[in-house]
Each structure stands twice: as structure tokens, then as C-alpha cells.
Length: 103
Image (cartoon, rainbow, N blue to C red; front, side):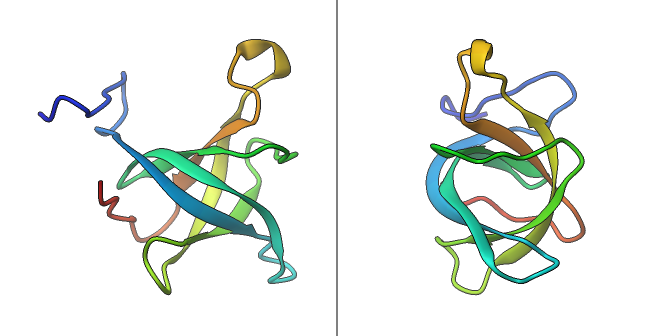
């Protein structure tokens, strides 16, 4: 296992990355939020943004800017609370085809 790989209980190995991501509202097809994927695995990624009012269970499309044409449907798995020290971050589960995160 690489020294910079993060492992958590019940999770796939996550690779630290900093890749721009645009979140799209699937009902309108319009860009809603921009931010950065901070770490990723084939099953999901951690997203950081200055302002992003998301709710667990919400589905969004994510454009992974590192890979042209890479759009994945995601579900919000968790959203950090203001008192958590991770405010502005959210975890996404990738639905359907997995995204292969390149370090």
C-alpha cells in the first residue's frame, strides 16, 4: 500500500488528490457548485467547497475536471457540520460506474 493512501473502516483505499469538481443539478443540468475532490476511491470522494448546502441522500452529477468528459452520478453520503472542524466538506458515493482516481 502506498504511504499516501488513506484507509478507513469499511471503505476502499482512498488516494489523496486535489482535483477540481463541478456539481450539476441533475433535474436542470445546470452547474450548482464548484469545489475540489480532496481524496478519492473507485467508490467515492471527499469534496471541499466554500459554500455547498447539500443534504445526505441528495443525488448530483459531478464533472471531474481532471478527466475531460468524466461525468458521474453521485449520492451525498455525509455533510460536515459547522462544529466538526470539516465544515465545507461532504462525502460522495459514486453510483453506477466507478471513477478511477488518478493520483
